[in-house]
Amino acid sequence: MQNDNYLSNKQSSGQNSGRIRILVVDQSLLMLEKLVSILQRDGRAVVVGTATDGWQVLPEVLKLAPDLILLDLHLPHSDGAEVTRYLKLLPNAPRVFIITADDTAVARRRSMISGADAFLTKSVDIETQLKSRLDQWFGKAE
Image 1 (cartoon, rainbow, N blue to C red):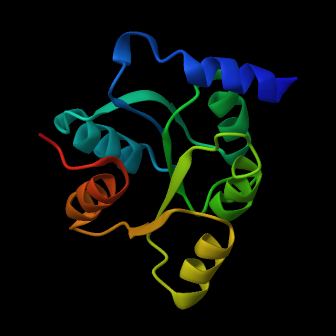
Image 2 (image 1 turned 30 degrees about the vertical axis):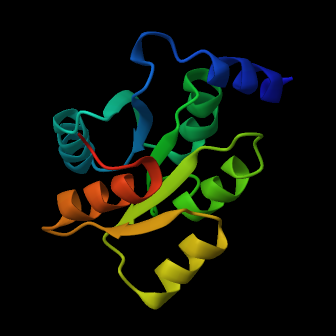
Image 3 (image 1 turned 90 degrees about the horizontal axis):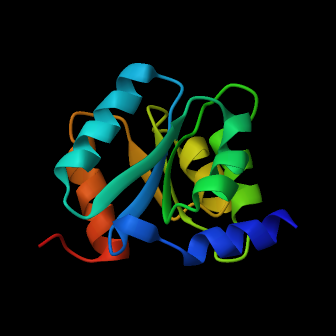
């Protein structure tokens, strides 16, 4: 039944129609704030929620029906790769961009095998990386 709720929520975008609905998930409150700030400056996006724990993601997705999830790879309780595997089983699954400081081949491979749509590194150019991926998946900002 939860999938039915997800579908009905997904269809009603409400007042933010036409904007990319984004859930931001990061265990670091500082990085969470930075990502939200970047997205607020991008006219295409609206942050519909945030989370700091892997166990919070699926309930928030079912409730908020985001188009995109920015997901930290290393989270308490359930890591981003594991969460992504579950998310990609949903009908009309949201896009998932893994964002991590772990820029190793193992981290990249785990992220891509899980079904993530993009792999971004927490670095000085995170804003450039994020905007480039938003352009790729959702079209250029006007």
